[in-house]
Image (tube, rainbow, N blue to C red):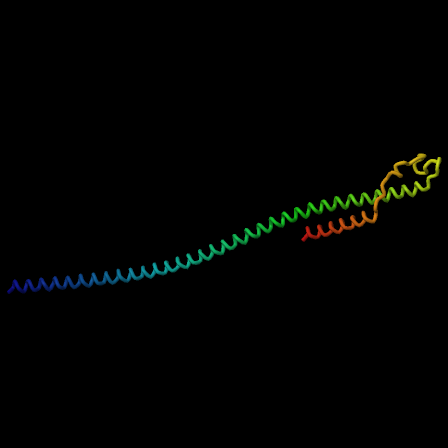
Length: 170
């Protein structure tokens, strides 16, 4: 019986050891499970943050595409405006040249009319009071200028030039 009691005591010690090991393993498992749950919550939070970041990135990308399209349109409009400005400047230069030519033509005609007035004062076989010559054949050969038509053309060119300047400033 002693053997039996010794065996019983040994069995009780083993049961007690197993119970302690069981409690230790259960405690470790419980701690591991809690750690794993905590890490899963952290991973879930990180994953949610990544999803939000991806949504924000997609929205930013869409906004960027819209802005790039608008920028392209603005560049095209700017190029058109530059081309229009160059055309207006060229037209302005042409109008200024034509206006200057017409002013010169009117001024020359006015001078020639003054010379014609002096020609009326010439007397035959007497020297010209202005230059001393006895004849002025070039005055008789000059074609007459339609001063009214020329002045109308000048006014039209001047108005067109003013409009061109105003359009260029706008």
